[in-house]
Length: 107
Image 1 (tube, rainbow, N blue to C red):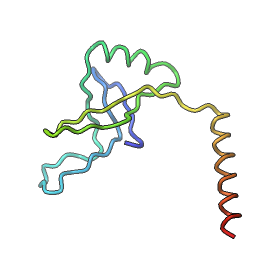
Image 2: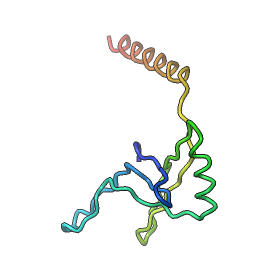
Image 3: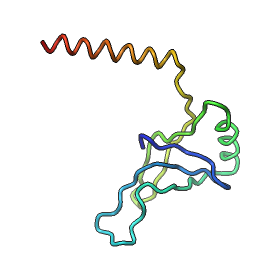
Image 4: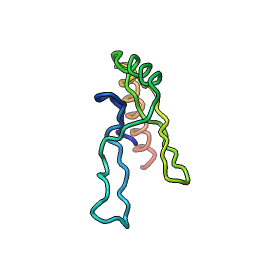
């Protein structure tokens, strides 16, 4: 679920790049682990997400997966916005400081 995202293709919303492991006891009829899977949404939800998802800088991403006792899966999705350049630089500085502190504390 880490690298997965949702995109519109033809008439529906598909989740892409999400790994779902194959059934270990299955034969050669197993599914592909990283194939695209269509999400079932109402027309109103699809229209709303399509309008927001087409704006520059927004991406539809899955947050959590719920699996029922019957084997059905529900995916919680959200609109996400990428980081700005100054946020990225801030994270790099924090990471460098932490790495330096760990190096000093090690000796």
